Image (tube, rainbow, N blue to C red; front, side):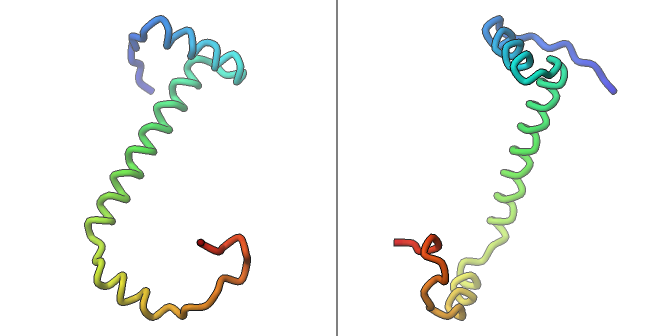
Length: 80
């Protein structure tokens, strides 16, 4: 495992201390989790953007045209 010295504005450090205390977590846990969540979000965004670039709108419309036009089974699935 590696170490990295992190410089934070005092206000952010105070907020992190408060969150760690409220979550009953260490500062290290808080930072590692926050970084992991951000990395995951950015990786997911990149993945979806790359997949969208490979998409073919004409093929999508062709596939969609084959779906029967029937009302949804459940009322909560309706789009008005």
